[in-house]
Structures are given as C-alpha cells and as structure tokens.
Length: 174
Ligand code: FES
Image (cartoon, rainbow, N blue to C red; front, side, top):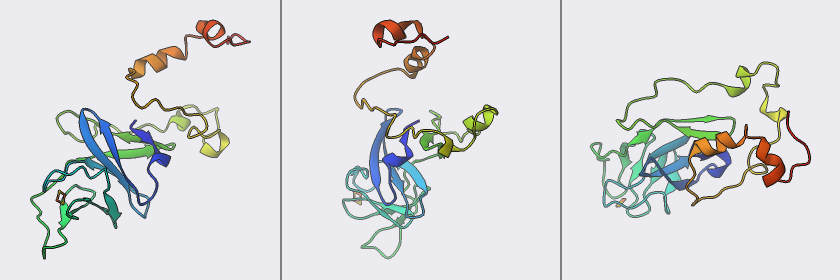
C-alpha cells in the first residue's frame, strides 16, 4: 500500500518513494491512477515535483516531455514526434477500498495474483463501503518519516493486553 486514494486527486501528480525508488503518481481527469519512475529520461528532472497531468500523460516540469500510462514518451513539445525509445518504468497499480496498491517485483515481473476483495471475504459484514466510517482522513494518522515495519502495526492489534496500560482503556477486549 503506497497511499490513500484521496492523497492523489484528479489532475494531480505527486512524488512517492517506495522500494528504494523515486516514483511519480498521477491521476487523469477520468480518474485513472498511474505510477511511473520519477526521473525524466531527458535530463533527469523529478516529474513528481511540479509535473502536470495532460490528458492521460504526465508532463515533465523541465522541458515538457509527456509520458503515457505505460511510461513511453508520448510527445516532446518542440519536436514533431515523440521519442518512443524513451520509457519510464510503469508500476502496476490497483485501488481497493480507497487504498492505493502498487505491485512490487524486484525483477520487474507482472502481478502474479489479484488482490482479494476484503469485504467479500467476511460474508456476515456489510460489503458496501458506505456502511463503514471512512478510513481516510478521519481514522488515519500519518507519520511520514517514521520507519516502522508493517508487521509491528499488525502485531499491535491482537496484543490487547497492553490497551489498559498504554492507552488507559477502560474496557478489556475479550
Ligand atoms: S528533463 Fe524532463 S523534459 Fe527535460
């Protein structure tokens, strides 16, 4: 998971850093979300800082080169044709339940399995997101520079014994 869907509104390009890579995420006017490597193949500008969304492309803030969702150069404003040999790595993205997921294979392979629909895995609970409180922004806190392994947050939840002492909980979960 690399963010909440609301982090990247329509028409916005934003920098991300995951998997030791500088990335740019952008959302087209149609709402499609794409994630590409961030450094332009021209002179290396970071497209996530000042890049613009143009149709289904993201445009470099330095000389205006545009890249499509597949990462291939689509246009160079001062040339009469794109340079199709110039390509940014494109990362597989899925949005589920207002979360953004990027498939990470260190060797660049495609996704090997589809994300499960969490709500349909728990049949006795309502399957519509509108039945729940929004996770973002109300129930979310971000600590952008805090290095925490995901396992720690998962281990925290079933460790209910600490609720009383650390959080001053007034009831004990059973
Ligand atoms: S560095 Fe991106 S267009 Fe020149």
